Length: 371
Ligand SMILES: *Cc1c(COP(=O)(O)O)cnc(C)c1O
Image (cartoon, rainbow, N blue to C red; front, top):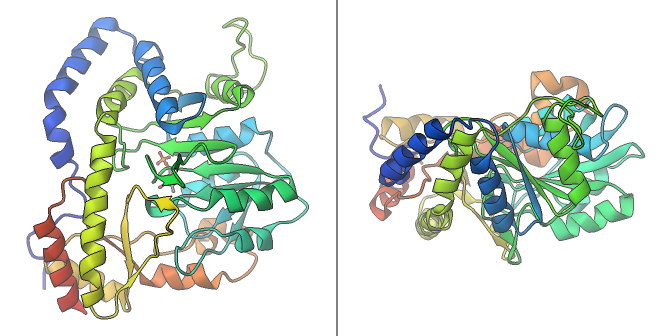
């Protein structure tokens, strides 16, 4: 049996992008006229605006979210010989960025209810070589950084936030990215704030750290002269077109997140009537960006297939926890039962700004019939 025509796609970027067409045309002309393609006013403007949103003193535009994490860790002085704790339940890039610094990722389990890193699972992963933890605000839900930070302070390690799925999310009213030592964002097109290609940013209120990231991302160039290179850097710059697209879209981020929140509420109201569906708990202190609408179901792969046959797009984030991925086998230390069980059950339902109440009802009806 083949899939029915898609009635509710997993992600529809057109709904939110179409109204911006004219503004983006103007942007395109402005950039081609200025011939400032890398750096320049568009990038400066976006960095300022993004730091304001994050309530940090600095934002540094970089090429993508993975680079943001790698550069933040390197700027913190982390590299070969160090260990960095990473939740097993995350997108592989979190761990890949750690490896790119030369440090070793140590995978920690997650909370059964929220599927996020906890103080206890962080504590269990610490060794004398631990230099940092990368806290991931997965699915858009803010992790409890203040509690994780207390464990980190005691252990003398840095707290890096992976905010790639959490643009605009908050913990007790404070934006993610400003909760730890440094925050890392991806603006991959499918994220809550997405560019028209790859883009990322590092945010922090530590001016020295921000300068280090900026220098590393620009060939290690000295602030004193463009021909002096004090450290070995690399090229990870944000280009003007992406920065301009991000500034244009930024004006709509709050509204888009509100639309996602409304869709999440509709799902939360209707899903309990679908037999056997488990919901991911939302912590009361977390204001989620609802990047993904994740539920847990038995026989997940069958349900995924049946949803497709019913005309509903769905996904899995993520089917294999990081510590069980082939490329990361050499870092495996122990079983992480909560992450392993979650990977078999998680299912991501359609979620995007502009998804209608009718579409959510349709998804819930088809899901109920699949179960
Ligand atoms: C998307 C994502 C990244 C990587 O961002 P890129 O811009 O694709 O490099 C890192 N961590 C998480 C949790 C992500 O979802």
